[in-house]
Length: 253
Image 1 (cartoon, rainbow, N blue to C red):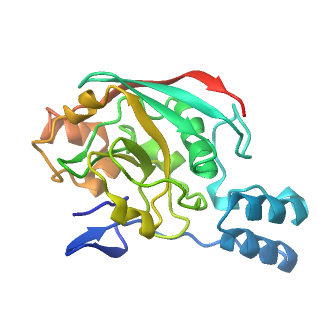
Image 2: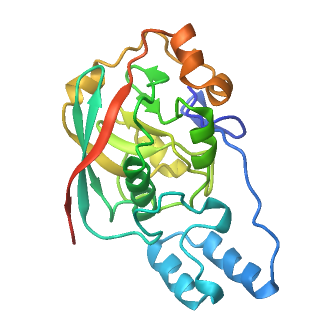
């Protein structure tokens, strides 16, 4: 079974192959002091470490690396406390996600900004594996996909990938971009591989279960990246999709 972003690394889940692909990006060259600070931030694995390093770093380095700078102008780069509720209007039936920022602060912030930008609207559920997970988050417009295809740093895994939990797909260390998956089953074996849940379906999980699965893993991610929904609608016309995703409430810490 593959849990992939595009194409690069291979991991193993039990006796089955789990491909979690993606391509690495290098940090741009710069002054030695800046590079040293970036290296420390990149190697940090907890938000407290990131915050401490960012505070000490020159030039106000944010929690995301320079090549991962988020494009939304509506919120800042620093993770915020609290929770927020997301309504997902879906062709298979609506559902609700509760996001806990303290579970995976950096991932939660990226998810927040993607929703604010309207990124997930019209995104197809392009990979559906019954009993395992449903994956989505490749935009229907390749230009928009390319704009947001920037990696963010890892979060520590504080929650387990149990049924109904929502998690970013990853290709290895510091490689999360836009793709997320919802666990159909209790996939605790993913926890040790760095998949950190940031939210949970609190209403409408039966509609997630109803997402069309007949195409399985057939849609090609390379084709999606190149042609977006034009490719998916032509080759896989019955795919379910996110109609609209919106934040309906926020609760500060």
